[in-house]
Length: 64
Image 1 (cartoon, rainbow, N blue to C red):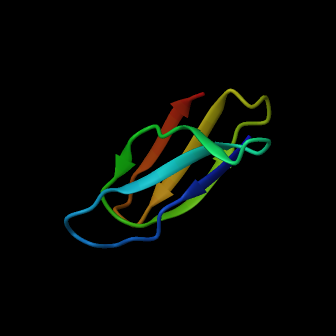
Image 2: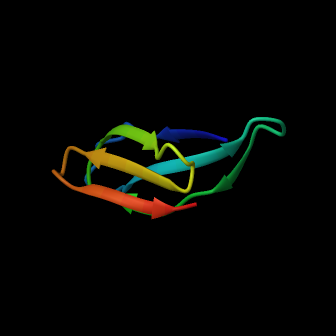
């Protein structure tokens, strides 16, 4: 599993976090968006959570 984030800071677009299947190269799921550029994405040590930090000063935790 690989996670990536959008660097698009357009006001009309939400920044997105994508979770990818490395074997197929296709997105497995997109767990919603933050309001500004997503500057960091990390997995919890056990792989059950993904955290993302944004320029909008929010941190999102998502279960995978």
